[in-house]
Image (cartoon, rainbow, N blue to C red; front, side, top):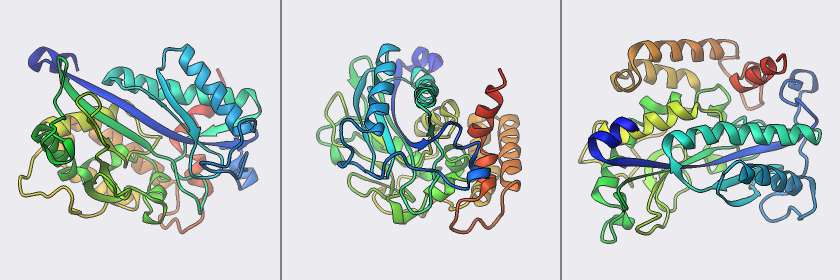
Length: 330
């Protein structure tokens, strides 16, 4: 980001919308192998969670902690699935935004643990309900000018912004493993649950990989919807920005028409990742090889054909669940 600012005067702004679930009991993920289930704290969704119930109290407490730590919270609310939550905060510069992803999840986990619950950021912890995403809003400015905005542009987006979108769509399959880096993440990419599986852009289609929100000269942005909440935020944000700015652009692409669909399993995503020369260019061959090997090892611990029911291994060997288990020893 520093280099981009020195060379071109560009500042990259990012805001993430991180969804999660609140489950009964402490360390519910580590205990999943014993319990074989997650217990919802409430069966309410968007509009049916009362102000004094456990989910709302958790959301309010977590939001207060975030505000005390400098987050500019905008809205905090239950999400569409039972026991699901989301807390949104304002955009900031890309490296700070990546830090905030980790701090947000840590705060939520600690607040939940304190009241005898578990905040989980598994992409699809429960069969039959919507999974969790990390919708990532991106915009680029030079000085006070939002380069993604053009009042006369298609849906208010400038030609610079559309080129940025075009490049991400062109490299969508290359980036899929970075944005969805766990076995469980591919359960979320299910079109029956408003999943962003289509490689296209749209202002209204919730199945599109990229959404075009209504915006103005200040707020115009793109929203990448296909990122799971367990993605490495530094790797994901860096890869999206470098791709949008420097990736291959195909002028004949109509971004509103599907260019295909994203992989529905980690093995196909690994194949696309390993075959991509673009991935090696943006993160380096050595990092790419190590990343792929780590994800391959994780995939090999799980049944290749996962079926419809969540399996123990995809929870037990999930990277965030494993990391939490190790941190408990310190």
